[in-house]
Image 1: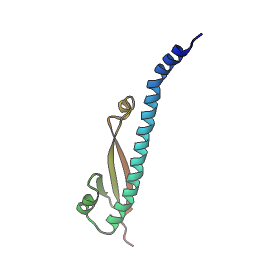
Image 2 (image 1 turned 90 degrees about the vertical axis):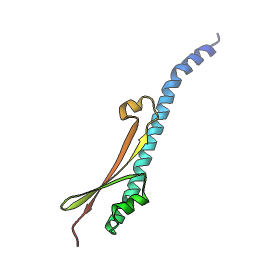
Image 3 (image 1 turned 120 degrees about the vertical axis):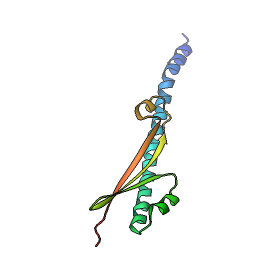
Image 4 (image 1 turned 180 degrees about the horizontal axis):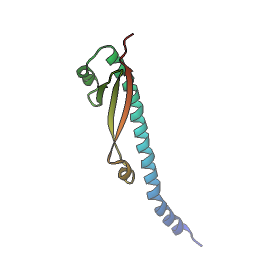
Length: 112
């Protein structure tokens, strides 16, 4: 008995699920990569703030990344964010078409 037709039907049924899983893995990889990139940028931004650079200079160095500084009494909160476009057809319903990746750092305002 020839089972080539059965294998083809099973392959066609499994292919969309496999492609969805593949795109989901790729999207999570992009999100993790962007988070890692923002962690590295946050080290540079905190160093620049400690060196006395203002937000205009930092924005010129990193024009595509959103940098916000919220000053409190004892510390400053540095919030760095950027967007990642989601490709997976089902994942964009859960996370949205654009996922906002955020990294926060606290800087002590106490002078030594």
